[in-house]
Length: 232
Image (tube, rainbow, N blue to C red; front, side, top):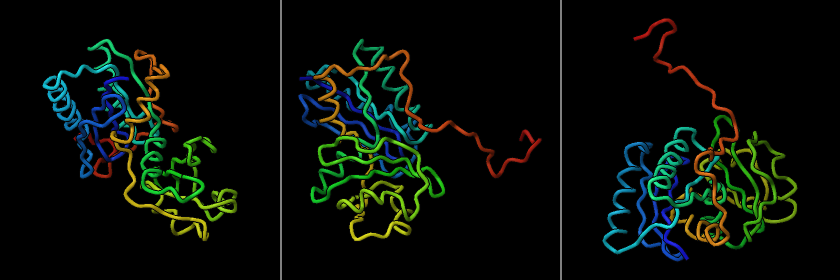
């Protein structure tokens, strides 16, 4: 059993949760902005102040490992690494799509397959398929969604789609077995059971060399208000 700080900044949501022995004690979250760089440190400080007041000492830090926002992932994982180095405790990585699926299973248990989707621009999503025991049936991938996507699963049972990438899928996936669940985001509070299990099984990362799971290479873009050759 352990005291674990859980952190996720892989999407537009910034969240931190403190758990003891697999039980959520305190959570901080913001779903309204992408100010992760300024919010995360504040949330961690508030959680640590609570932990000190209640004589709790962290045994590990868990972080959402991706895929997701390049910037968000770097912010969260940098914070988690810093905490692990400072306290000399292990780092746990939890896949972002698994966090979302844990949330979805909590909300809905009447389907056969779970399909998280994170928006990856245009009609592309980061996705995977899980069963109700959270076993990975289809590997995490970047997929362009069309009318034939997930047809094998849809013909075999009810499929629940969720995450900010699922909204764009509603217009192309037409099946009586397709169901959509709104407001499912990766939250640190839904990392608690996953990180506790990882801690028990000693599934720790190499803090020095661990990198986010970006899935796709970063492609830099030029802001629309920038003019080539104009340094201003």
